[in-house]
Each structure stands twice: as structure tokens, then as C-alpha cells.
Length: 313
Ligand code: AKB
Image 1 (tube, rainbow, N blue to C red):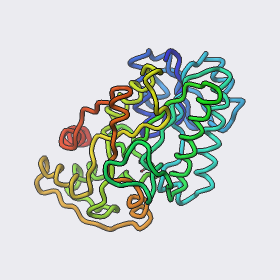
Image 2 (image 1 turned 120 degrees about the vertical axis):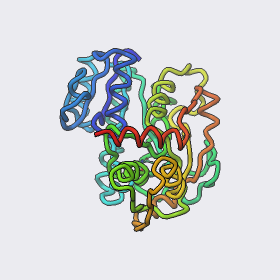
Image 3 (image 1 turned 180 degrees about the vertical axis):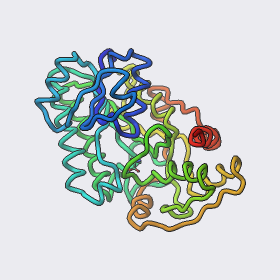
Image 4 (image 1 turned 30 degrees about the vertical axis):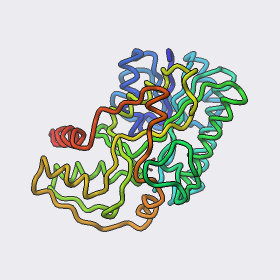
């Protein structure tokens, strides 16, 4: 990776990944793009351009003018928002991906695609979910993730494009809020714990989902994109996860720092149904074997760091 273009730069991952990549590859070598400009490091610490990923002409011009060799395509609609507007989710996630791949193809750009635990569905084994298994998701977001994984594989097989991707679990971070996801409760709970000492969860007791702290997700993207291609058998869809917990588990971890923390429930049926359709815990052995995936944060280490960060005035 020498000249990198990132789409969806204002999103939860984008805000931090742009900064992470600028530290490694140099500020001038990471072009952040988004449909809106937001004041802050993404638009101020290096090149920024307006971009709608569905606009092929604009994408091509940007790739050429910055001599881009790597595309990190993050722009997309998450699970809960997708269920509220499936047509928008399909248009943004699929037409955006197709347009970006078509622009990357003649320019031979390496290409990163963020898949998700949402690429699995009710028929998937829920415990230690294998790397290669049944994928029949019941959300439009999941449908776009399975289709995206397959499309990226196709561009590799058919055109030799260097496509790579990760199945992200719920990501927990403090720099930018998540928007429209099902796993977002695991971010909000820290803010509320620090501010009020209590949280009402929209996900029910006993609903386990895979999760990861953002620093480990940033490291995973950079490691995967730098991995020796001859070692990669699962190009665009590696299972990755650092922990699996339900609301009671994260609350117990918070109580080690804030003993009086109170958790109550008001379950949202839409997001609960999505959570119920996803795995409880992933098998990440392919990512470990093929490119050295090695997350550093477990639940308690993440909790200590999150609470310290979100408590700062
Ligand atoms: C969501 O909840 O939609 C995302 C995801 C797991 O892909 N965080």
C-alpha cells in the first residue's frame, strides 16, 4: 500500500482507520473521502475529497489524480438502518461496491471490503462458527455482505484483482459513534455507564455476539492488506473476533470499574431478531493461520480503556 483511498471516512471505522493509515503510510498518502465534510482530523490532517461511491466517473477521476494503488471501501449502511430502508441499503452497499470494484479493476488497485458477522444467518452453526459454512442471512444488510464477499472473490478469480476482506464483529470505539447497527449497544453502554451509572439495553439477556475493540480492528485491516498474497486462501471474508459476550457479560465487566452500575432491559424486537440470527462466537483460525490475526484486547482490558476514555471531560 502506497497511495490509499478510503470511502466512508466519517463513519465509525473510517474516522479511526484514516488516522491509523496516515500514521503508517504518511498523511499525504491517504485520501479520505465521504459525501459530507466534517471538521476534524479526517478532513484536516491530510487530503480529503467529496465522493459518492456510486458515481463511477468521480471515483475514476480521483483514483487517477491521486495515483491510488489501494482502495479501502467502507461506505455502507449497517444492519438496523438497512431493515428500516432495504432499498437504500441495497443501492448504497451493492451499487457502491460494484462501482468501486469496476473503477479499481482497470487500475489494478488492491481492494478492501468490510464484510460482517451479518453474512451469517439463522441456519449457520452459532458456536465456534466455521470460516466456511452456511450463509443464508435474513437481513438485507447480510444479503449485501454475502453478495459482496462473492463479488470480491469473483473479481479476484476473473480479473486477478487483489481483493481482501474481513467479517467484522461488533466494533467498540470512542472516537466516532456507530450509526444504525445492532451491536451498537455495546458502545452506548460505556457512555451511559460513565455518565449516569445505568443503561437500558435494547438487546436481551443471553444474546451473545462477537465483538472487538477498534485498535484491534485497525491493526487487522493493515495486517491483512500487507499479508503475503500466496498465503491467502480466504481472500474477501475472514472471520475475526476478539470476544463474545451478552449484555450481562459486559455489565459484569463494567462493574469491576463502576461497582454500582445498573443494567435494565427494554428489548427492541427488530434489533433482537437481527442479533438472534447472528452467530454467538466465531472460529477465527483461518485469519490466525493465513495472515497472523492477533487481537490484543479482551473484554476487561477494553472496558478499562473505554471507561477511561469516555469519562474524560
Ligand atoms: C451492525 O451491527 O450492523 C454492525 C455489524 C456487526 O456489521 N456493527
